[in-house]
Structures are given as C-alpha cells and as structure tokens.
Length: 264
Figure 1 (cartoon, rainbow, N blue to C red):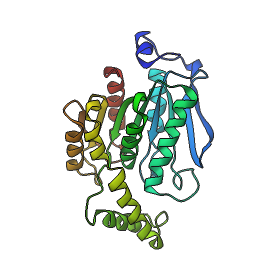
Figure 2 (figure 1 turned 60 degrees about the horizontal axis):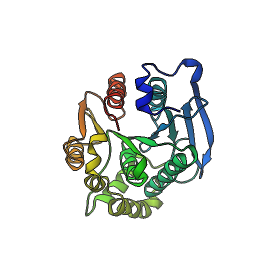
Figure 3 (figure 1 turned 120 degrees about the vertical axis):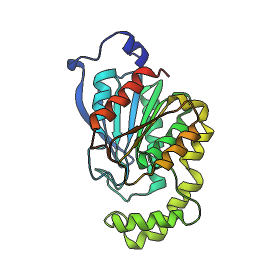
Figure 4 (figure 1 turned 90 degrees about the vertical axis):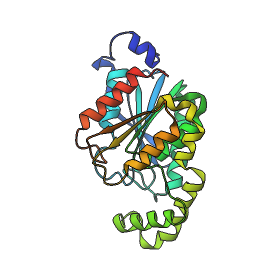
C-alpha cells in the first residue's frame, strides 16, 4: 500500500493490469456509489462530490478514472439521495450529511491516511464541509466552479424559487417552503466561505477553478472564496463553462498538476 508521495517517487503509474473499470458498490444509506482502483486499496483516496442537479455530464467520472490511472489512487463517486442513480428525495443539507458520513466510513473501513475531495458546483459546499469534518485525514481540496454562498436575507427564498422554476421535477411547488428553510439551514450551519476562513491554515491544499464562461457562478463568489481560504490557496480561471464541457482536457490537466505538485 503506497501513499501518493511514495507512488510518485516510484516513477511510474499503476499498470493497466492492476486497474479495473469502476465497480458499483452497495448503496450507502440509499446513496449510489462506485469506486475506481486496483484490487489492493491505496493508502490515500479521492471522493468526488457532484453538483445539483447533475443531469448533464458524467459527474466527473472521467476525472476520477484519470486520477486512478495516473496516481494509483482509489477514487469514489457518490450520488446524493434523490439525484443521479440514488432513490429518495433530494435535500441540500441532507446531501452534506450523507457525504460526510460516507467519507468517514471510507476512512474507517479502508484505513485511508488521507482523503482528497473534489467538489463541483453545489458539491463545492458539500466538499468544504466534509473537509472540515475529516480533520487528520484532510488531503487536497479541489473546488470546480463551486457554489459556496447562500446570501443573507432573502437569499434562501430566491434560491428556492430559482430551483423550483428550473427543476420542477426535483423541487415541486409544494416543497418551496421546506426547500427555502433547508437552504437557510445551509447558510446558518454549513456556509462554505465561513468554513474556509476557519480552515485557512490549510489553504495551501486548496485549488479553486473558476470557469470564465460560467453562467451560474459569478467570478465575485470565487474571488471571495479565494480570499477566505487565504493567500496560499491556488486560484485559476479557465476558458470554460460551468460544467467544464469546453476545454475539459485543460481542466483535468490542471487538477492533475495540482495533485502532482502539491504534497500534503
């Protein structure tokens, strides 16, 4: 069992005979999840946390496979309840709790010394809270076009209305009040930018990638997030869209470089 540093020092990547395509794992509290990796567990692992509603794209499964191939890391992808291949009803604060419990179970069951986190869009808020909770096992934190700020005042209600209008098949009109309350809970208990300030001593392990063509996340949000994490955090702007369909290879290359160049 090698750590990432030991693996890189060997000067090679895990051979194709040691890598399998993803394996679907038993649901975790109803959440669908899968793993890339060899038969023998790596010492460190990566958990991918997708955005909302994650109906387009592949929830970064291609990036998960790439990190396994290049660094010999076990990589996991999970779907929150009510989204993707998971059953049930989606809830913003519950998706945070589900992910934190899943991360803690991965560490406990596999004895991972470090758990790296990659969060996209809403997954940026999820990943930040999970990062706060795993403490001694904190590895790198990669935030791709992250959504990290539910505004004070009417912010929760405005977001609930936006989601209800754009995704009525997930958030129906009769759920408006409960979703607004749920987003208010996120603001009060899991505000990612406030958490970033609390954990700014770990800023050197953080990569934030803002997509210049992002029509959902304003650049101001990510600049504020970078400020919260402090001067050691790495901030990059790429010519891409919110889902990183455009110039996707460049995004993947920058994440790989961060894993290669930033020892934890």
